[in-house]
Length: 286
Length: 252
Image 1 (tube, each protein chain N blue to C red):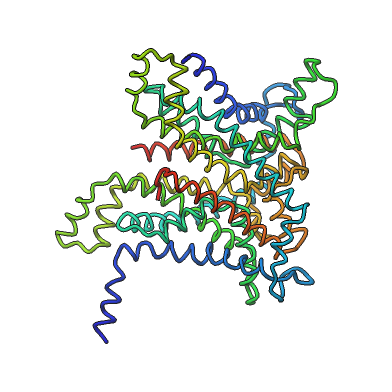
Image 2: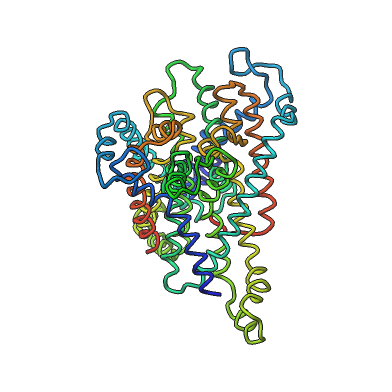
C-alpha cells in the first residue's frame, strides 16, 4: 500500500510537474468555459436573460433560419475573398523576400512588425483614411475629382480590406518558409533547359509552394471567419459576420443559448478546417 | 522579372505601412480636421491631460504587467515540459487558445464567470481581466520558448543530471540561463498582446477595469478624433519598440 503510493508520487516527474500549471490554467479558464457554453447551447433562454430547462436542440435549428444562415454564408464568403486576396498579395511578396539575399531578415521584419502592433489601432487607421471626412475623400475633393465624399467606409469592401491588411502576415510567413526550403537548383536546371523565368515560376516554384499557400490560407481564413472587431468598426453594423452575431446575442439580444450555439458552430467550422489542413502537414510549432 | 517583383513588393509594403504612417503624421497636425495646417503637439498634450485615458492606461499597464509575469512563468514551464516529453493534451489546448476566435473565448469566459458569480462576493473586475489575459498569453510564451529549447543541446542538462543535480536545479541553473533571452522575448510579446487586447477584455471587464483599448474603441466608434491619432501614434511606437527588442532577443 505504502509503496504503491510512493510510486504514484514519484511518477509525478519533473517534466510533468512543469506542464501541470499551464494545463490546469487552460482547463479551468479555457476548456471549462467552452464546456459551459456547450451545455448552455442545449438549454432554453430564460425569461430575464440567462438560461433554464428544458433541454433542446432548438438553438441549433435556428441557425437554418434564412436570416442567420445568410450571416454564416456571408462570413464564409468574406473570409474566402480575403484569403484569396492574401494569396495574391502574399505570394509575390514572399517570393521577393526569399530572393533578396542578405536583406531577407529586414524585409521579413517589415512584415512582422505591423502584425504585432495594435490590431485595434491598425483598424482605426483605416477609419481615419476612409470615412467621409477622411484623408482619401478629403484629397479627392481637394483635387476636384469628386463632388461628394465616396462611401468608402461601412461596407463589405472596407471589411475585406481591413481583414487582408490585418492577416496578410499569416500568409507571407508560412509561404516564405516553404520558398526558403525549396531546392534552388531546380530553377537553375529549368533555366539550363531553356525555360523562361515566367515558365519556371508557374511550372516549378508555384507547384512546389502549394503546401505553404495551403498553410497560409488556413491561417488567414480562420481569424477572418471569426473576425469581430474589423466588421464591427469598418462594416459599421451593416456588414454583420458570425462574430458580431455572437457578440450581439450576449449583449443586446441577451439570448445566451443561441449565442452559445452560434459560438460552437463557429468552433466546429474552425476544427473542420484544421482537420483538413492537418492532412497537409505544416510547421510544427508546439 | 525581378524588377517587376520588387515593384510589386514595394506596393504591398506601402499597403502594410502607409496607413499607420499617415495616421502618425496627422497626429502632429495643428488642425482638428484632415487638412494639414502645420506642426503641433497640441493633441499629444490633450491626450496626456485626459484623465479617462490616463486611468485606462494605468489599468492596461497593471493588467499587462501582472498577466505577463504569470503567463511567462506558466508558459516557460509548459515549454520545458513539452520539450522533455510531448503531450498532445497540453499542446492541443495551447493551439486551441491561439485558433479559437477571440469573441468565442470572450463570451465563454463571460458566461463562465457569471456562472461562478452565483457564489456571493464575486464580480467582474481587474482580476477577471487578468485571469483572461493570462489564459490567452500562455501559448505565445510557450511557442517562443519552445522554439529556442529545440535549438538547445540536451547534453548540457544531462551533464548536470549525471553530476547529481536534481531535475529542478538542472532546469533553473543550466537550462533557464541558456534560454533567458528567449524568455525575455516571450515576455515582451505577452505584454504586447495583453496591452493591445480589446475583444476578450471588453467581455470580462467590470466597471473599475476599463482598459486603454476599450477607451480607444469607444472613441473610434463615434468617428475619429485627433486626440485618438496622438494616442495611437504613441502606442504603436511603444509597442513597435517592444516587438523590435523582442525580435532581437529571439534572433540571438
